[in-house]
Image 1 (tube, helix red, strand yellow):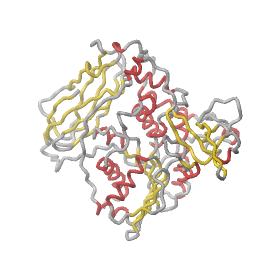
Image 2: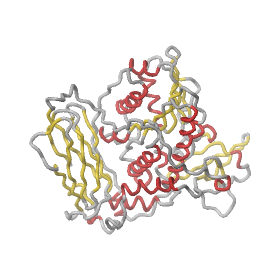
Image 3: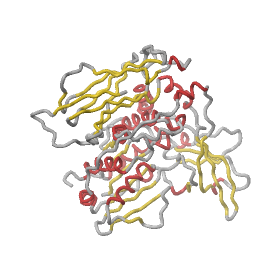
Image 4: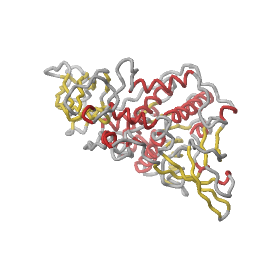
Length: 492
């Protein structure tokens, strides 16, 4: 669904050049005290589930779901009955709200999306998952839109006009409200979408067994806990080796949840063209900014891309051998005294690679090791999508506590949180749909929103660039890095 609109410069506020960097990050706000979740005691940590959470954590769990799935009292929850009665992107209509003969740079452009079903009938409730952007292909400029669910089958999408010239409005119905309902149903309390195979070693002897965050077994399990954080996973005991000999784990997709053929159709993949954006942060500026600094990057491979992009950009950066691109990589520039280290977050991880259990620490423990003067970058989420939301929230709460401890001992340390980016349209939607990422980003904003941290809105960047791939290209990653470094070095 596309519209063509033209924006002209304001005479009093001319725009010097088209800029492709609407990234939506928030300027850090002064820290203010809030009610903290109570530490889980040893007795609670012993349980293979979340203990009684504080009111803060409970609000955190409920709040993001209300943003994408309002109370049933406002409109009836859509129950999937047939494809014909579900939302259809082809039949839906996009119209300008209060169209004008002329729009100026700096104006807000609003469109209304009226969703219809496959029969052409207007929908009477909200809940659809919609992404929208404006773009000017000739200028290689683009920006994402803010979608507001009007709860009646219509949506308002607002765009800020950043550059002059023609802009195209593109709206994508990623998932119908009925498909969102299916995703919620198959994800609630479902810990088996990802299964793990653990390998136990003693000398030359090796045995394999199934592992997971929550295992159903009437027999005793090999349980692996972090009592201080209430983190937990378990394995079925191997035939002869003790539990302590667990060394590596790898993941695989579990059975696809039970769905009808029509439900599978609703979660079918979308195809989309891409539009590259322009880089705007030079290698010299990055070198000046990072000189004499240590960058500690913690998280999944999408934030490891920051290290890879910086090493490719800065000629003096070299990898230090040996390294493992699945767990820990160190790069240095001795001349400029720049250190960039990436470490993979602890379990859970979704990979066919055999991950060495003790090489991947939980991020809260890594944050506790940060010393004065380091710059911390954290990026998590992609590997948590297949699991119930409470697992991700528990990890974020532990990270929040560690950040507060760090800020107490080193108030000047810059902490950067990279939100999730969109991922490939060929992903298994029941496990890795962008709807899960969208909800998890809402949770991250809620958990970290009142802290003195920088949020890099990778979701906004990749939506604007129409980049539906798990690992975006270097131009998109450069935009993420540039935004982060703009908070570190204002005069670079």
